[in-house]
Length: 341
Image (tube, rainbow, N blue to C red; front, side, top):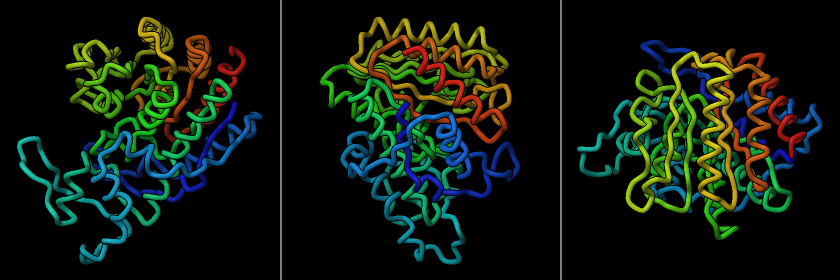
């Protein structure tokens, strides 16, 4: 397996996160990157550092204002007196608010959905590198049939114009758009992270050329709360090109794998020219913020199903947080995927 990664991924390293009324250690820590990278290398997969394809693949998916803010915000930190190691706001725009302000705190709230995406000195380099890993994996898969993008920070909660849920740029959507442009055909996204891929859904919701399918925990009492329901099927030209398969919290291998099989049937009916898998390991029974009970063998079985689904497949790393099972689940998935090709 070609593993495309960026050493800049470690440069974003948030300390804390406000969760359920408490300040806790941030789950999306920089150490996720070397843990996953080293596990893939030890298992014999070929590591390739991502080249810089420039801003165009990012801007093909994201609002230019968001990209401008993320790339230049640290240089503007003097506008915030007494700023510390992180730039964050406590003020967030709602749909009924009418305009984008000029001031930095208001601008942050305009482009951020929550407090999980603080900006630090190396944040832009990390999220830019993560996006380039997605681009590089898409390009590698076009040549070899499949590749794995070790993206960190993750991306599937980022909308075209908004960060959120630990995500700054939507790596899965960037890879999908790269493949769509290269193949000239339609592309499918299958998201198996425990959280709904709300940002990816939002980016493609009104488009007919990208199918989005997400298997995730019921959002009625789980992040992202406001999207991920079964009646969300696309809008306008995209009507029918979105499918959500929410499962009860506590679901294990059997229910999860059955839902993935359902999702893959929808992908097959769509007939895409390429498949992008938003690969989250936070469905694991051991994940510290997960809601499912998927075993390591469950991830291997999922890999076998997915490997048989399409000859051109890109795996994009999404969630999966610090626990002993995290690298084990990656190795099991990549190994089973490779063995089934």
